Length: 593
Image (cartoon, rainbow, N blue to C red):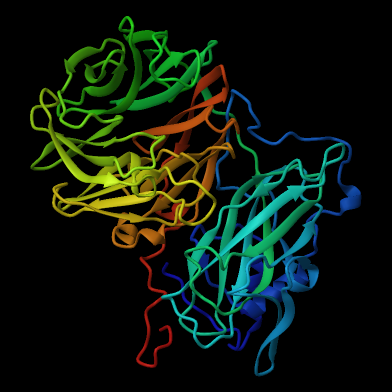
């Protein structure tokens, strides 16, 4: 991902050591793998105490609830501020948790690095350690590991997979009460032995700063993505404290199941559309569609107006966009005796008029956000099937309109898909030169790298597509929403990790992932909400100038709220985008250049 490999046999100068120490005391970059000099990292580990504050000086007795634990008011968190320097655990500070990993010295010449050797063939090996003395203002932590290998067969063609297990020893509660099983993280190996990688395993874990944090690291050789059968060495765990940030704005929190919002900017005005019923159901007669508007970036909202409330039908807003005149278009799914998809238009976000109810050969479950494609007109993606059916009976495709939505042409891209192959609830952006990039949710179950978002790309204005799997794995029925910033060219992928209650963002130069879907950078948390799995989520995003606005819902049945969190669009500096992957570039000797 644009990182240069540095062997731990390279001579170390004093200024290099100082630079490494400074690096260990700051939040690292957002890329999935970041390569650093292992020797200096270990020196930094030795130089940094295992508590950034003296535990004796830490306040005691006060318990802090896990952020976003079932609340209806989501808590916004921005990723640009750490709460203090990282706490580093070297191999000497870890012990066996499961299996029979061994502590060894990885050596080259006069350099000897203590590591835990984790097998590439034996499942279930892990080591663990305790972190204490987190700073008082710490609301969450980021967890990274530093790994290396001395094996000559290492190659970027191979990947290994790691995950973390996290919990806290909070007074008055079982030490399992805050347990989180981390998502498996896949990364490519270096092109030569003795090179190191820093891998982010968890970008946001809410903590009580007064309680010890238990961290367990496990390699997953049984995961389908782990193809490197040789041992790797775990040299260090780095835990970075993170700050808390203000709450999201409330759009609607009256009693009822307020859910599945769509948000669209009409000029400088925000329009948030959502539906309300009695439960997590889409067809009940009680479910209708409503709208509110804001002209102050979501701080205040106008009175609720009705968009659609057809007798005997349940209605849900499912997609939005703009027509060629800049008016808002809104797809509403209407379910009664039959399924229908109604397209509405509004110039003010208050009054909506029906434009079309297209008759489609394949009835979608959902038609998603509308975007413009030159030579084609308006385009939206759709998917069809049954969430409860394993298939092969699922499909997806495109809808295109040359007359601002009055009529639509349907095309099927893939059909007869199994559930693991099925991309659902996609979001797409037009990149230029006929290229379209879409990201879709996966219905894959289980906890492995096989459960990750899909990426679909087209180079011919949407006529043909290629679907592949990404490395975006911290997802549970996580609907993506893409925002492409015209000024910077950066692409933001927003999605809500259900069950964890975390709204995440990944920011990338789309050229870096268009042909390399495993190159998506690390995620960052931008908001939190309810951890009740299906009573929160479904983020939908829009932009006004340099500001992104994200609508999602959060709560616990039968009462949930519509929330909007607001954050600056990423900039070249804040996103720290790296050049596209050059880590595999080699000189004539086969070593990284």
